[in-house]
Image (cartoon, rainbow, N blue to C red; front, side):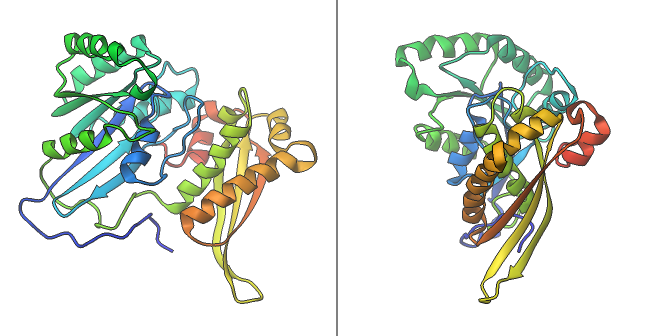
Length: 317
């Protein structure tokens, strides 16, 4: 099984007119960045929940056509950090600006976070990105008359190359956004094979799928104090010669009480988490899966650099 997620594609001609570039998606928590990435790719790559701070890492999704390749980088929501994990999430998000050819600054048309937005604009001024597009998301749930004042307000604060209203959830306006992004690409190489959808290993997406179910099912601090690490991933043969993928994953919490909540009475909650995650993982891998989950405690892992490196291997610490 490949180490990266791929999908079918026609061959890309080695044309000198071929264009490519990195496109960073930034914004405050819960503005729809991951939903936008998934909509652009046409399939689920980044986990999505109603809770803020769902995304912890840079997640790269690759769109390749005969004429261009766009490498989209989804980032954690930008906030005022309260502990080390959040500090690293913010650093990871701003780190995506370093290599960006184009930035999509996504804001929520329905729920503004003006203080955070202003801080992001200040970072954009200092970064001096070649092209920056303001993406006004969730326009499907607001009065269209409210959009013009928002655009006018942002045009006074920053010189955007474009301002585009979209709904990442319904897909409205996303094709216009993609067309504009592709028009800004400069001549460049094919960074990744044409059939590659992401450069992250499958284990990453498996652990993220389990974490998504924890985020969706548990409340309060429990989902934020949880981390998932895939310890074992191998193909096995059943007695009937059917192939199955065996996955063993560890769910880490910070406290014993959090562990007990995730396990649930008689193990019912962890079983439910496993059932939901297995269905998505089977769809993702297009294979039968046996998923085994264990829960253990690693005290204060969100505040300890060494433990963060152990559990958050994709954070660039």
